[in-house]
Length: 492
Picture 1 (tube, rainbow, N blue to C red):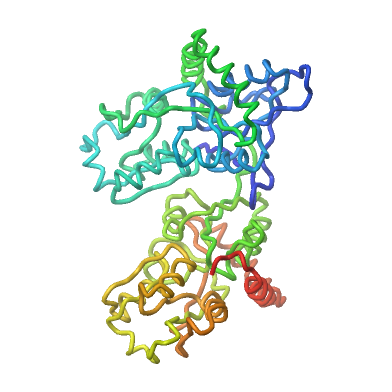
Picture 2 (picture 1 turned 90 degrees about the vertical axis):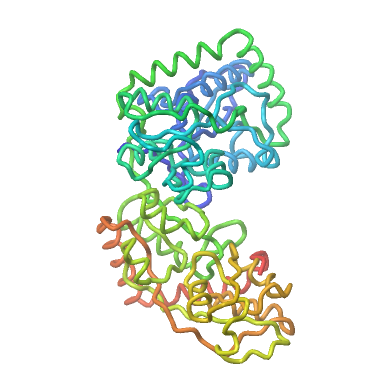
């Protein structure tokens, strides 16, 4: 399967900068456009060295560049990174068939609407799935960071949500039957049906109507106003329809390989950022023991590293589907997880602790039987609360900050977390929170890989062995434990 290359590493390092398609004009300062090149027909790879990307959005921004007398350069990144680049001022425009939503409008400034489409459901032609209600029992795929995935999680709520990094990966999951259905833009669905010889069908009733716009930094109102003038001309002159027809026809004629930039495939690592000292945020950077080890593993494989931040509950599923090469964030090796993924050697033995309110009379595990217990979603701590403490009720938190606040606000009787975060919370909230002198049985931590990814596991095992033998592994844990305790912005 061909996949779109995303050449960015931790926090936007290594973003691919493609050459400008337009020529220099009266202003040589380039107009930087962040785009995702698997959002056909809005932005896609052409395979041409002189102008690697094309699409409706490319036509539009080229006209904007021409109007302003500025050449256009393209930064090709995963879809969710478009918003980050624009909001940080590292790109002038964001483009890729982006749906205008109230939530996104809080982060960026949208142009006037330049196209309208809809979100639809695609299923194999012989599928028994017939309507939205039937998707509740299905495995449904969508692209990470898009309104398609938001709709899937918040409204449809299928049995299994399968997020993929690119639209090509979503399509591939349908083709090889890893997904029973997928949610996508109507034009992307029509292209898929064309490309596969009518192997798939589109639900007759669309899920929503979408309005598309270009993105700008909130402070860049002058550029947005200039772009809006061009957009209105683009629509009134009939250029939009001409552009749409041109690119739909071009995509149907393109060989499959031409839609992908042929370069070294990145090593994609999924993490959740509230698992110190394994992974956490310091000064707006993702750091930790797991990040340093991931960098070493990627170097061993001679592949650029790409860090993908997701909820902890999605780490294992993303690895299982092949949407990520490795899962990290202090993952406990358990028989249940080992049946789903391949684990590296253990690189640390984890200790877990129990926090209670300082006024509590709880002293031993038996005191907590049948109480209200909190833990992070998807963790073995959550399993311990349910299966060992037989909690009367379990509160499932997204991160440690929420869990500690739940304890301070008397939502729960106790909170279970890894020793590093528990120790920090106990030190910060002296007189309000205390750590029980009970160590829950230790667990082994490892990195997760897809079951057939023996190459990546071997690289990880080699890195772990070398760093343990040199003493560097132990030094990493000491350094990041110390660094984490100094991080006031972590929120705990």
